[in-house]
Amino acid sequence: MPATSVPRPAGKTQTFLAIFLLAGCSPSPSPFASEDLRSFYPGVPRIVAVGDLHGDLEAARRALSLAGAMDAAGHWSGGRLVLVQTGDILDRGDQEPEMLDLFDSLAAEARARGGAVLLLNGNHELMNTYQDFRYVTDDGFADYAGTPPPAFPDSAFLALDAAHQGRAAAFLPGGPMARRLARRNTAVAVGNTLFVHGGILPANVDLKLDSLNARIRAWLLGDAPQPEWIRGDESPVWNRVYSNAPGQGACDTLSNVLERLGMARMVVGHTVQRTGITAFCGGRVWAIDVGMARHYGGRPEVLEIREDVVRSLR
Image (cartoon, rainbow, N blue to C red; front, side, top):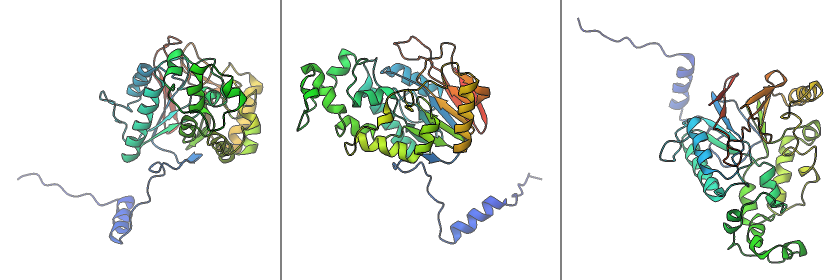
């Protein structure tokens, strides 16, 4: 006799979904489907985090391919993957506009497929906004040469070399590039993992992540003064407390921060790890800047989080 298939009874989830749809309802949209930014997102089956890229488009492509986020044609291939880039796309390399366009394009494609690309501001993004151009290449200045000057340039702007004024105008608070950076967070949590470029310290927790992100965004948009904690030892994009071989005191501080935020771990960039992605403090912090940009001569490596299993992909 020919084989016959016997349908399996629907499980509780499928039965509920069927009733839900028959009643004329539809599932809630994914929190990642909107361009609106949140500081906290729910957990997902798979997250991949990519560290500092510094103007190197080829390094970015290798990392995205390694993550399973981009195909050979440069399109999103990650499905419902959530990809987090922890800042420092800018400076030290000559392909900044191409990289920014690539990540923005992938973010739009990912949203349409149930995934997400979450980009964070690092210290080099914010340095350009407060006009610290020490690490900009000649090509990096030339890319923005045609940017119109601000309507009311201040003395600091007028004192700049003429070849640097276009980039300055683009990145000044309220300028076109600063407004583009304002479409990013500076710190974000996905499930029980917190992502930030430098590190969240107790003072940053006191401020609360929503306020931290909102105050930086308002400054980038030109709607508020520069927050005083953007620079210095307690800046979330500058400090190296957790990424520079932290001792017991730093690990105790980390535990306090994670407990207060209800997080299991923190993922940071900013400090090059010469031996590859490194876990400190018993796996409660992962340092993912591996110097993969051409400037440092590193190799591609990304961090993968599946539920509570964390590993590096090389």
